[in-house]
Image (cartoon, rainbow, N blue to C red):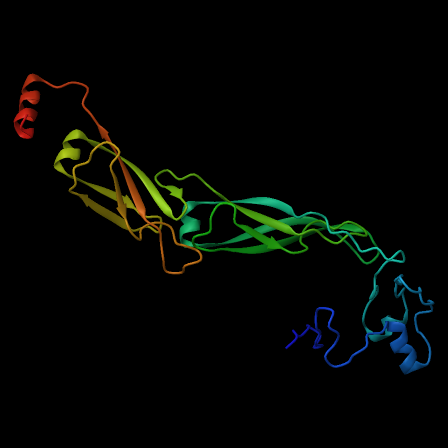
Length: 261
């Protein structure tokens, strides 16, 4: 079934013709059929050209309450050019990208009125930042860029940028934490206490021997996966062992006894 337009008409795309046998005609032909003559006062532009229809003041369409400039095309048959999108960064904290947030963005732009004059306009745009969005995600607002005479308005694109975090670093859907431990903790066990990005207390007991380069993974404590609702990446804790710079003879002897050296 072809999609329905906002005015209630159905339309079909492609070159296969209209399934209901409808033959499109221009506005002059339709008015001439009903009223006996064209109400526009313009002749046909002929093959290969289009006509600019415009109601000035008390023109034909004014009586129908339809306003001015109902049809705006160009006598040379050209199509108005659409400028490239206007991009703007949208910095987000890691907490926002973890839990989601709603951002209100006030934009100022120029628009072209019915008389072709450029005027300033301000507008508040709402952006629903979804959990799991990544740096580089683009949110497009069609036709919300500046307008220029005889041009289509540009699209406005916000590009997600990720703010640095004091504790966590993001790696795709995983979160990375760097944690330092003493040699005694590396050998004898330790625990890691963290506050998650959604404010929970997370206490992790580490009973493994922590060797240089050791990494502990906690499944499901990473970032939400935007395209897999309910799933999350992993939390990866990377350990750095702090070796003592010097030991007393007694400490050395104690280590040898403990380690069987």
